[in-house]
Amino acid sequence: MPRTLTRLLIALTFATVALAGAQRPFNVPNYYVSQLTKLQAGVSVTGQLDASDGQNYKDGSHLDIYTYEAGVDEEFTVTVSSYDFDTYVSVFDPDGTLFDWNDDDGYGDAYSSRVQVYPYTAGKYYIVVSGYGQYDLGEYEIMITQGNVANIEDATPISAPGQYGGFLSTSDPTVPYGWTGPSHAFLLELTEPTALRIAASSNDFDTYLYVYDSFGYEIASNDDADYSEELGYNTDSALFTLLKPGSYVVYVAAWSLDGEGAYTLDLEVYVPQR
Image (spheres, rainbow, N blue to C red):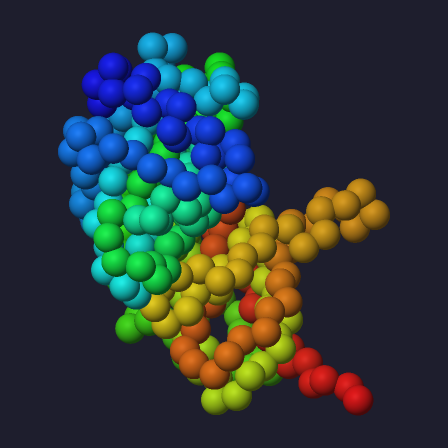
């Protein structure tokens, strides 16, 4: 991105990010918008933050700006990752309103940030990439994903309540667009609103749970249910969630790429008390 453009946009951009609570609109002149890099779904773009980029006056973080065209209900996910610095991503809608932001989606070998966008307005969305602070500089990757990312067709049907066992191998696929290790996918069909406790336990690896809806978007996840000294720093996973009728994919994953071994997936149904 041209450095002069970034400097010109700095006041417009992070003044809005810093004052998100006041809902100050993000208004970028058309001339500058035409100079911004346009992102395409499924196409990875590599960028670079350095000291010559503009800075947010609030915390001094440097920034780059991108655009993405989306229609109404054309859900998309923005993922920014770097091996050099702690990433931070903000998304503004076509009216200049701050839609959402994210700091740490998860971390392993890289700092990663992710925002899932459900467009209620068609048009140009502005995506601002920065570091967490002024010293967060280096190379990063940004990517837009669209459509169904949950692997429903290959998921094993399960029901709730129920208990299931399995064995993860390092050759098993990872969660689509996730950052954890190998995983198994399970398809859960619900015909009525259901309050669930979903738990994954293993004596062989650090478990990680994900729940995706039928559109392929993550709605719940958990790494360690209670990583405390009292429980011996247990790495089992558990989450509570209220799900509407529909189809869901539950992933049991290993936290690391070399995680493998036997595990148990347990689903409990909770009934409201009067």
